[in-house]
Structures are given as C-alpha cells and as structure tokens.
Length: 304
Image: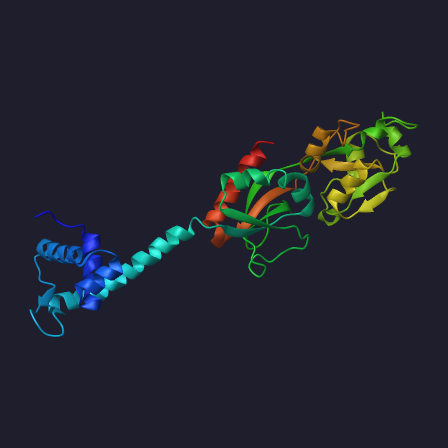
C-alpha cells in the first residue's frame, strides 16, 4: 500500500481526535469523509499502530487509543508552532519600518537624492528619516541606525567609516562677473564671507581662517567679517543665492557643482580629520534593516 502524505494524514488525525467524527473532521478540512478515513487508515498502516477504537453502534463510534491520546498534545503543539512559522513567513513580505537619524544638511544635499535606489533594492523597507540636529538617544528615541559627522567615537555606538570631505570656497557663478569678479584671493575683500559655524566647537572643523592660511593668504583678507550661519545647508543656499562665498565641503556641494548652481572660484582645498560614519547600537548589528541599509550606504559612499 502506498504511504499517505504524512502531514495531511497527521492533520486528519488531529482533527478527528477533536471531533471524534470523520464527517465533522472532513468538513473542517474541506475534504470528503472517505478521504479522511483513507488518510487515517494509511497513517495507522505506516506507523503500525492503532489510533482509534471503532464501535459499530452507540453514540460515540470513535474513541482514542491510549497511544493516540499520549501523543495528541505534542502533535497539537507542533501544529501551533507550524502555524506561527507560516505567519512569520507571511510577515517577512510585509513592509518593515525603521528609523534613521541623519544631519539635516547631509540628508538634503546627499542622501535624499539617492534614497530611491535603496527603496528599489529593498522594497519592503520603509525609512523614517529624522533630521534633528540634537544628539539623540538611540534607545530612548527608538533609533535603528544613524549617520554622524565627527571623529568616529560615540559612547555606546558601533561606528563604520563612510567618507571624508575636502573643503574649498564655493559661490554663485554670478560672482565671477560683475563689478568685482572673483579672480584672486584678494578679490574676497569685495564679497561677503559666509561662515558655517555648525561645528565650531569641534576645534578641527575648517574655517575661513584655516583655509586662507593653507592657500597662502596671510593678512590680505579679513577672515572674521561676514555672516555666521549655524546650518550647513542654509550657508550653502545663501551662496547659491549669490549673497556671498561659503566654505563648502565635497559631500554637500557636489550636486550643486554638477548642476551649475555653485562654482569653485579657487582650486585650493583643505582636508579635515572629521568624517561621516554610520552608527548603530551593538545589539543591532545583525538586524536585517540595519545590515541592508549599511551595505547600501557603504556602496553609495564608495561610488562618489
């Protein structure tokens, strides 16, 4: 005799055990009573054990044997676990949201133009992007992963290097023309200097003073005058609008340079030991969304 499909047979056995009736079990399983009987007989033959006592008359024609009664709890628990596993597989195809904290300027000037590529690669992940400039608590604020600009060391977080910037002056193309066109460093005296002071407490963040010194300009330009803006994106937007010259950095100005909104009047650049890092909690390093976002971000940073 050909052995039945054991899983279907076990389901039939479990259903009959609860109903003590082939017709009732058949209705639950959406098959015929004859099919249920065939599955039960096949299971008994395969296991070489009797599962039910069958009476020819009386109110209850089926009763469980001692052997069947002893394994029924374990079998029902097994089916419960199987159902949970199936639900988890279904849930794996549903959308999963996770939160990323990112400096506002970096999001505006670099990440948001690329994020569609992440969504195309991982369509079941929904990013929640927090651009708050305050230092967030990853646990209290339920942050999954972040991008930070600094030295690479943040207590309680694992950091992965992404990229480092070069700093150089940028301005609107309009400033290369007009009454005082920008041609030499001395021409800076005729234009407003825009100071990005968002990282002024770091001590190593490039400033107009440090850039001018590296460019060989000592006292020709007053590097203290101008406007101070505590937001990198706003400082660059002021330059795009033609209201001065900002000290830009590679990551934040590359697209505006490509599109012609900004130009580099001078080619001298200054490096910085600070860099962008991806950060997350130690316990989150094996989280599927964190791993996916991390791998994608590293590939994007490497493709600059």
